[in-house]
Amino acid sequence: MTARAPLALTLVLAACGAPTPEGPPDDTDAEDAPAARRRALVIGIDGLRPDGLTAAHTPVLDAWFAEGALVLDAQTQATSPTVSGPGWASILTGVETSRHAVIDNDTVTGRSADTPSFLQILTAQGHRTAVIAHWTGIPPLVGPDAGPVALAASDAAVGTQLAARLAADDDDCLFVHFDEVDGAGHGAGFSVDQPAYLAAIEGVDAALAATATWLDARTGEDWLVVMVTDHGGEGTGHGPRNDANIRIPQGVVAAGVSVTPPPQPSHLDVAPTVLHWLSDAPDLASFDGASWLP
Image 1 (cartoon, rainbow, N blue to C red):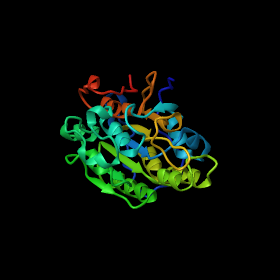
Image 2: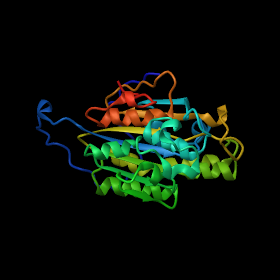
Image 3: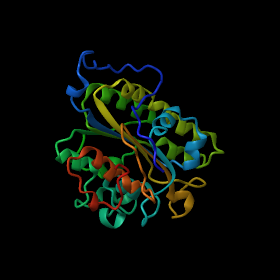
Image 4: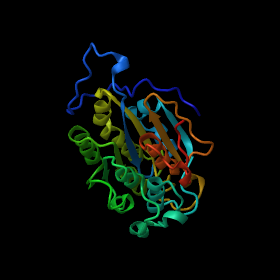
């Protein structure tokens, strides 16, 4: 699916307390204006099913990805059980489990040093990165030389910390992880028939409202926003490699750029897409995923 190039990431939402930077003077010649700075936000929502996303009331996510590309038939990594460890490792590194060596939740500290996360790559190139996560397995998957990495006690706290980070710091790339959708799935069921599951998805969307308002107020910046998940779910669990667990939603929007998912979208596409957006010379051939950008 190819989406039209967005003119801007424009949302009309509740006002946020984050400061709004001043734009260029009114008499600035457009030809003399500096090129917009590129920045990226990757939103990880643990345990998000495609039908859950479409059934829940998510005005923030809907507005973002109406301007880009949203697919409901992306797939997880292809070789390990559909659990968080290998899922988030593949998202962060862009490679399959045979390369990053995280095969379950017990091996998150054993990720191969030969497959750095996209945050480590960006940090090594001089970019500022930051991570806010609700699951304690995320920090070792990100890597020790990227960050800072902060843990949050709830999805609402992830949203609050993200808004504060955006207002106070100057990061090029931020990765946030929300965990309560997965928790609701394990507790009540990964199903659109379970109000608790839908409420958790809507809670993530609400937690992003202040960030959406802040992005809408920015000038002189072009943002890439990515939404991704590690796996789906069925009943109150996940793990088997079946359609309910491996089929996932995924979204990408990039200011001023037409986004084109590859023939088989995958959450391995996140790392090469982010690096394609931010890196001066990304080695896209080294990844098992593909960039969604031209």
